[in-house]
Structures are given as C-alpha cells and as structure tokens.
Image 1 (cartoon, rainbow, N blue to C red):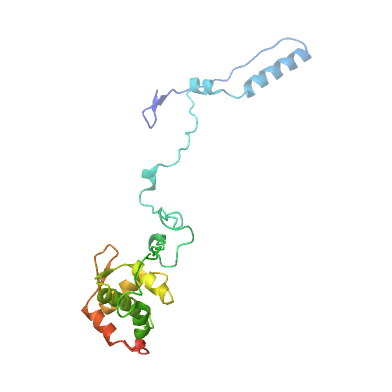
Image 2: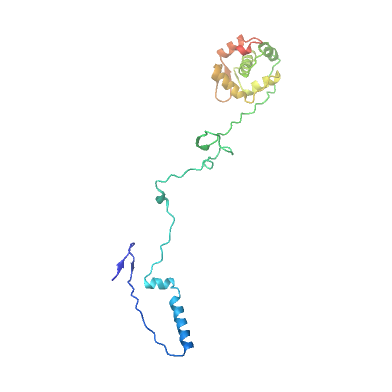
Length: 219
C-alpha cells in the first residue's frame, strides 16, 4: 500500500522483521562478532540510505517573503529618511518627514566703481544726513529715492544700496535683498522685476519726502 503525502510526493511502506543469528566459535570470537554486529546496527543511517528507505528529512525553514508580511507596518527610520539635499544633523523638532530645510545663503553685493555720490544736488551724503533713517526699510527707500530723483535711475539693485550704505557708514544688514522684500511686503513701497532690480513707487517716495531727521521711527 502506498501512502500519499502533501505536496504530491510519495513514499513506500517499510516492514522490519526480526531475525536470529547462530554463531559457532570460542568466547573471544563470539564477543568480537557481537561487537561488530552491534556497531553495524548502531551506525547512523546516511542520507542516501534514508532516501532509499523512504525517510524524509525535516523541511528546511525558509524566511518568510514579503507576502508573508502583508498587513504589517514597518516603522521608518526617521533619521535615515532624510532625503538628500537636507543638511547633516538632527532634524529640528516638528520638521516634516524629518527633513531639515537648507539655510538660504544671500547673494554677496558688490561695490559700484563710480556711483557718483558727490554729483548732483543734493549729494548723496547730504541727502542721507537730511533724512537720517533709523531702520533698514527706510534706508533702502531713501537710497532708491535719491537714485531716482538725482541720478534718474528708476530701478536699483542690492549693489546700489550696499555701496550707498558703505559710503555714509550706515550699518549694513546681512541680507539687503531681504530688506527690499520687507519694504515691499510690509509697506508696499517697491516693485520688482524678479531678477534683482527694485523700483520705488509713489507710496515709498511720499514716505521719504515726509521723513525728517529724528522722526524715522514714527514713519
């Protein structure tokens, strides 16, 4: 009779019969024969012998594949999920997906070679002294107004403002471009072409015209 097992494989049925052995000889010879027989019986059965006898080895355990993990949620390592382009270091508290936003580096302004600050009326130092603005939003408006009225230059850049600041020893902000953006956003004094040029409008010019030395904080 053949018994079927799972997987479609088959194995035969083995019957083991007891047998008797008769030996002739002296005691030493019998003892040696018994030792040989005992050793043969106790000898481990090889893999080929087990296969011949129909024995089956224990199935090898295989690590479960991805389908076995269906329904399980793996916790993502927040520190390793930092995308590329983010700065090295521990992500700040509350940052989205553990990503740290790269710090913006402002462009470095350049000194104009021939700004002509001593030409025209009033000169730039005289106009700066007359208005004496006490914050950067007012200062860029004063610079832009002087360039527009005295030099006939409608649009200026951070280079114009930086050079004007240095010429009259005004404290220079780390990011003059941000100062222009603040003046546009909070005061609506400037327009921009999006390429780094800023144009003061009538609202900004009127604010500068009203500005007198010593009352910059009220403007």
